[in-house]
Amino acid sequence: MLTNLKSKLPYTSLSIFSVMSALANEHRAINLSQGFPDFPVDPVLVNLVDKYMKLGYNQYAPMPGILELREIVSDFIFRQSSYRYDPKTEITITHGATQAIATAISSTIREGDEVIIFTPAYDCYAPLVELNGGTPIYVQLKHPDYSINWDAFKVQLNHRTRMVILNTPHNPSGTVISKNDLQQLQDLLQGSDILILADEVYEQIVFDENSHHSVSSFPNLASRSFKVGSFGKTLHATGWKLGYCAAPELLMSEFRKIHQYQVFSVNTPMQYAIAEYISNEAHLDIAKGYEHKRNVFLESIAQSGFKPLASQGTYFQLLDYSAISQKHEVDFAEELTIQHGVAAIPISVFYHIPQENKVLRFCFAKGEETLQKAGRLLSSVS
Ligand SMILES: Cc1ncc(COP(=O)(O)O)c(C=O)c1O
Image 1 (cartoon, helix red, strand yellow):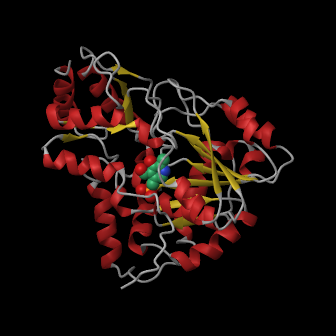
Image 2: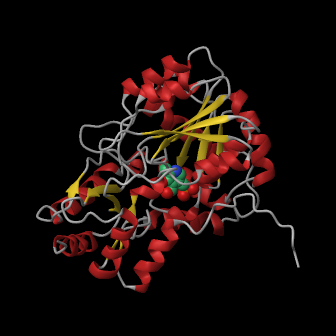
């Protein structure tokens, strides 16, 4: 018997996504909790994977990824932000954005380093900081617009601050960072050695008059940043777990030292298929489709007691239920699943210390019929 096994993450339990999905299955509820599309990947892309497998592209890819794909990522970022990453030395293809985030953190964070995380936050940042001996420092986004409180941020900066983690478009809130925010960040970090980890996995999914502003569009931010993207999000193929990291050579060479031992390289035929597929720029044009889905969902709940908060990007919509119930978010999310047949995620779980704002997150990356059915069920809740 093992008697001395000490967990490295003693406070980590089953994630809320697994819990809510299991509850949704058990009660046959419509699952708008976990963030993944329920529609198929473009058959053109699937056929390309098939083609490259049959052509025999089935052995290890080069450690940083195939050059063709890195070149296309470099071009794509250049179109987005006018900043040019060298595909040879500054871009690496990863096993999803999650690995890029893990590798960026483990290649730079050491015992005693502080890492600023804005909350509510995607769930993997803090445990990865802790695994590397760092200390997460939490700065709360302002409810209900989830904007950044730069005064609260400034207070947390000190000689131990090693990294700031930014996520835009933001999961779970669906908000996007403004140019003014990035300018403020640039001014506040000027003269310091503080790094940025920019999680931009929803960079292609921005709605209405909003735009995605990347750290790479500010040269003095790009020079200290790891920018992370996800083909899983962009190609509606979350199960393929492919993404990228772009960073200046100094940072990228440290990133690759870790990447080569964590994964060495990632899926070869899929890299070739994605490179060919996204060389057609139209295949990256996914925002309008998601904007339409968001609108279908919003229309379907227009007569309900739920009040939508602004969703400027991602495939998430927050709904405020304070006019319906005063229950805690976790309890209300369970009630909604069990009694009304729709599963969502309570926002309170994305905080270090749970905040109760009576807000749930719904994923609208689903077929129109599913969204309309969910809307009808939500409209009957009172
Ligand atoms: C904000 C954010 N970052 C990272 C990821 C992980 O991306 P991937 O599936 O490519 O690892 C997700 C997935 O939901 C996400 O929402």
